[in-house]
Every structure is written in structure tokens, then in C-alpha cells.
Image 1 (cartoon, helix red, strand yellow):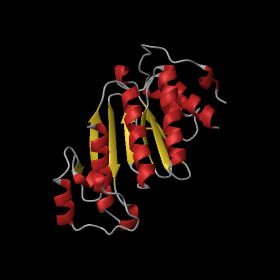
Image 2 (image 1 turned 30 degrees about the vertical axis):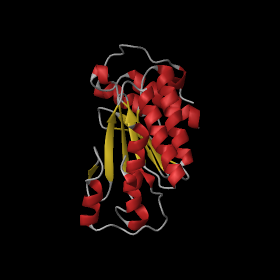
Image 3 (image 1 turned 120 degrees about the vertical axis):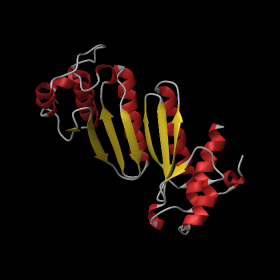
Image 4 (image 1 turned 30 degrees about the horizontal axis):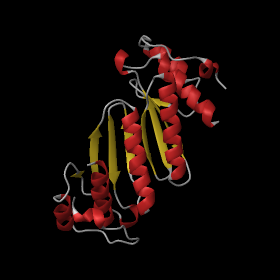
Length: 105
Length: 105
């Protein structure tokens, strides 16, 4: 488990430079970045598992006070993190991604 | 409440013609169609309401055995229905849309 998953989101985290974001992204598996958000698509069986995954991501977002955008349907759940307040990616996004990976590992 | 909301989804419903789909769409409020799927964006307060709405749509999909694609995040929940088996829109999509409208009215 990446130690990012041990960190806690902090309000007012500053926007990362592209290099900083790239370095953090390299510590995650399965996440992609478009520079504004990071996202991961989880493939699951059927619908109920997708709903479970969506609620897990929601629970994590509430717990960290850093809320994802989640899309789910039959066979998949896609989770995206971005930091609207910072206008892009912050460390909080990567912390939540690592925490979600740890929860689902 | 539109009486579509009184109907029940049926397995194997046939694809609708564009005219048929247009006629059913006109009976709904707030839904748009791209010819392949219908969708509605619900604006809500905060995050918890969005999660609630996503779970309501999921519950409805399970109940009707016709599962939506749902996207949610802070302040919104977007629900889409399509019928993969038919390769487009069927009456089932409009029944679920009308039922969701009735539930949230």
C-alpha cells in the first residue's frame, strides 16, 4: 500500500505543478490524468457491485471531505478526483485515489 | 404523474422508431435524448443528496431489472437509460424515466 493512503486530505491544499502531479500519478496503479482530474475505471460483475463501489467512493469522499465524481452502471464504476477550489489537481486527489485503491485492494 | 410511471418494464422490449421515441420523450419533463439514450440531470444541494439520488436510481433499476448509468458528484446527479440489448431506446427506458420522475416529484 502506498503511504499516500496513510495521509489525510487538508483543506486549502495548493495546486500541483504538472511535474509534481506526474510524480504522484506514477505512485498509483490504474489511474489516468488529463491534467485537471485523475480517474480510474473499475470493472465489476453486474450492477450491485458497481453500486457498492460508487457508495464506497462516496463514503471515502465524505470521510476526507474531498468528494469524487462517480459514474456507474452495469459492470463498471469510474471514479474521478479533482480539486475545484484549486482549479486542478492537488495532493488531496492523490491521497483519495490511494485510499480508494487500498480499500479495494 | 404520467401513466408511463404505472407501467412495468418487460424483457425483450423492441427498439423504438425515432418517431415513437420522440412521442414518448414529449411526455417526460427534463429528459433529453441523443437517439441512443435518454438522460436527465438533477441539481441537488451538496453531496449527500446526490448520493441519495444515485441510490434511488439504482434501486429503481434493480426493481425494474433495467439498469441506468448514473453520474454524480457535488451538487448533481445525472441518470441515463438505454437498452443495450435492443441497441437503442425501448419503452422500458421511458417507463424508468417516468418512474424516477414520479419518485422524485
